[in-house]
Length: 310
Ligand code: ADP
Ligand code: MG
Image 1 (cartoon, rainbow, N blue to C red):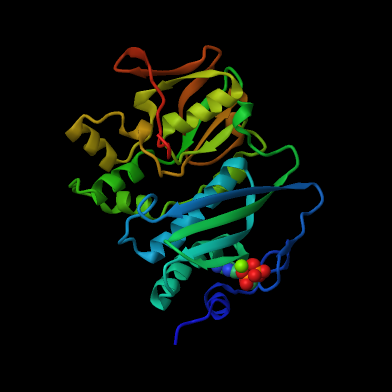
Image 2: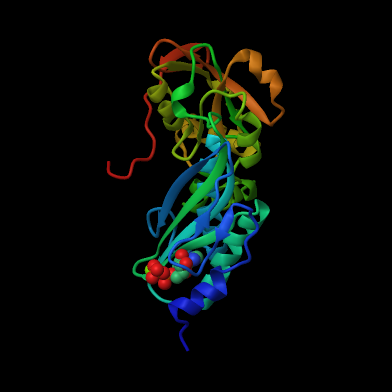
């Protein structure tokens, strides 16, 4: 017997609430949230469409995990602590095994951060998934794209380019050591702890979803500044280093998306106040545009990332 919409929600997507902010969860027309005194609610939504954001043969465990991860990454980049999400699920038919595995991936990450799934919508149609995520950030402390200042140092967390390499491996590129890159592509780790650690000391921040150059470009544009990057300082894994050596595709870490590392700017005197895994890659300058220092030469780097309608 095919599960009804109601039973499906009950079976796969109804869990006891963990957060004090959740006053009412799945089951009524709306969920109810409490925002504690002195905090603001950060809200974001991301959609994933079959054939656009993921391959038709994707493992539903990875899909559930990644759908939540990309949303928690947006909260992290604002310095917000995730508390709850809603899930809008459009799928062609009810496939219980698929739902089981999708929910497994989703809740494995939700449980790590005690995030409550508080509601959503379930409809039939081509496979399209949306999560809306909500987080709490102390008033005045959200990390805005518009807050970079001339003289700020530019940092990135972790390593850049692994997810890009993972995508190339999925598309057929052969790589000796592919596991880490594929994992970063399939199950990115949102930098939640890092976002919280830097929120009271950093100036501007973005998460790297569309590519380092494009996402840093958002900070530059919103802040009305420019930047200079030192190519050799961009942190890459040994697998990405080998990929670049073999293919000479040196632009890849600058233009590949899906890493979900944070890129932030911080006044030099504040960097001693944070203790996270991050690397200085450049500096914010008055002169507009992005300049790249590579092999002793300075050149303008034309910013381009993934764009849906072009
Ligand atoms: P309505 O008809 O008022 O839109 P629904 O019948 O769509 O309500 O949903 C019933 C309840 O289940 C609501 O609380 C809604 O938020 C929740 N819900 C629906 N789909 C999902 C889902 N995929 N995940 C979590 N909660 C869901
Ligand atoms: Mg409905």
